[in-house]
Length: 300
Length: 312
Image 1 (cartoon, each protein chain N blue to C red):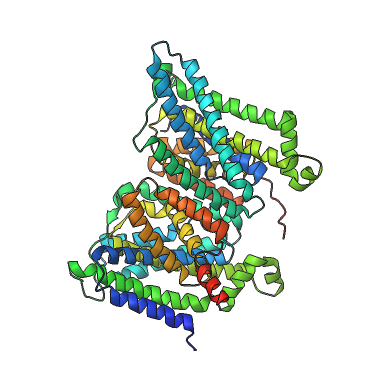
Image 2: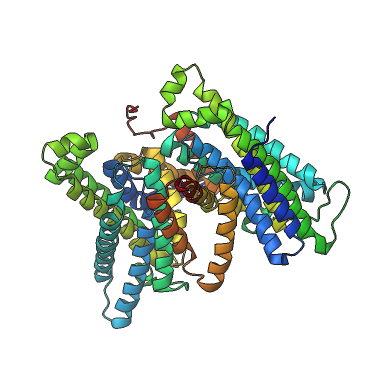
């Protein structure tokens, strides 16, 4: 008999992680129409930077507080997002704007391959561990399960990121401009919107979100080469299920994938991976633009 | 039927390779056989690309072809290589006929995502199948061909010849296919599918037939790869494998039926040296090459040949 509370808790934690990973991907697609495979690399870069920084921080002394460690993680994410995001958008992607979406997918695939090896060249191939914040928070008894407080904190972080994104897109001036670009790129440009600048900002924000997911995952895993390649496909599944380019879609996609996976883990563990992609295929078959996506009229 | 110049060239090149197999070192025979087997999957990717579709899931048929060979040998005790390949082909054709009905409704990134999802479904199933060795996969049993079992030293050259034979037949077929009604209609669909419909051609039907043929050829490539490598594992269905096929397809270009074969051999040779000398920069070389191709050689390395001819 599967335990529904356990499934719910596990599923929620996993869904929060999924949302963190997928949020940046969906923001970039929504505004720029680029399905960014290099998002996996931003995740990996964030994780590696965080692991190195935490290692340096905890080597410093005994008065290391967890709160400062978290601020450090956020700092890492912003740093990675700024540097990598700016380099890739200004140095590569801007020359490709206006090309087919599928070509952009291949371009970002090339970027992913390059960044994978950049990571190996900078950090080597040995695993990095930065479990101190994870251990420092300890575990908590939730009746049916004992869960790490760190994992519960991820739920909070995901809510924060989701809320922040909603506020940014719906309640600020920049958000309004971005929505106008989403609606019609050319008309917004004609109205005096600096589309290029907005693209750069969007890409940096998206990259930072990917790095943030990586940075906050680093303490919970061993950081090894190839984590970016693993993560990107699961992030694709999440955004495709919810609808590409939709924040609320990414949230729903994350919840669906998170809960189904948790249900599979607790009942039929060997279907764990299968079920994620089965849901992805099923959603694509029934609603190709995702549960929350708006089909766009095809321009011929 | 008149045999044209490129068909003579293809036949000549394959015969030359078959003959030179006697003088090549073992590792090169193995590398060539594997590269040419994978080139068949790439042919499938190219066929879809000619219709404007990019598949990030052709590993699905590569894997089915491979596992059919492996499972047919281990569970059914079939050792005849041709029969095993036929089995993989049969399974793939049936699956492609079903998935094709669904996939031909999709374009652009949706086609890419859905093909990717299907191949990852298979990957997800295989990595958790303990009976099939989970992530490690399992070994293909010793095979025979038409009742003759090649001795240990002859396996490499036999499989190379077999791959060349399949490759030659498929290359000749595709050379005609690309200029046939359906082959040309695929290119027309890439340019403007609505006009294709206006002309009274069913794009759905054209894409469907194209998809099924592309996947069948992919399955043959998978079966041959399994026979060459003597091993199958779930990585065959992983998206990175499909990405590799897309890479080789773009490297060669869609200009000529020989392009994927040449690109696959170049890819395999460069990889052998890169993995030996700069193991941590191999993917970087791939990525940079891919960007350079997209920027400067959008029609692949084959356009180097055609461009030269035009200037003469």
